[in-house]
Length: 337
Image (tube, rainbow, N blue to C red; front, side, top):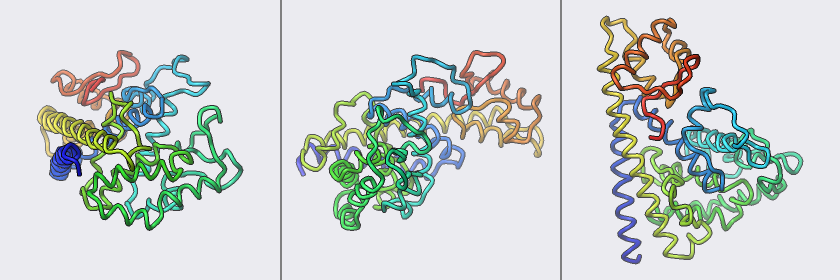
């Protein structure tokens, strides 16, 4: 391995190992909140690699019905946020599975709810339940799509990745995903969504820690999966992106850990039967929350929910995400994290 690639690999491995260790030691609420935020960020970054411009905060607000309608968001008649929301659903579906349930054509199709049976044009193209016009995504016939997935996920190919350093293997997997037709069949986003699970499968990480599209945020021109099998420069760009993605994860873990501790301090119940601790955990776990959601999830009255939210906002540990008095949305992290 060239010196530059070795240095890039070492730096990326170091950051990922550090992140994996910190998440393993984190309270469950912090781990769940970290994953929820990272999936929003990864969905937006993955959409950008597919030339769909979306901000993670738009996805965050859309999840609670707080995103205002905007005709300018339409891309050839389809809302670009809806397109990115399809990638977000894909990421959630894939990260919810065990690695053993993903790396064959049939298992991946089931996990991601890809429709590989029926008339041509019925494949969801990795966007789950979203039906997209042919002008946006070229959808091959189901038989060809299944064949492409089978080529991308052959037992021989999957065994091959065990013989390489895991991050090099992950880059090689994306290169093979592109070369075998997987990206053309169901989209590059599906291959990228498999990367964190591949690292767990290879024993490189204990948890889902590498979300690769994030590493190319601000470096879109350096994402060259078609060259990852043949060019050292593309491999170095890939390893640098892995390092950047891990650094984003480390920074997010730090912010959420601090917020979680402060929320517990501010909302500490006066009685042992109080719900302050439960509320603090929920506010850490959910990127965006309303008073109604909080009351329903924690078994609180509307008045108690408003009181706890007001106390957290007054202490500076919770941030209003909308300015509408009639529909207030809050988040532990402010918009533009």
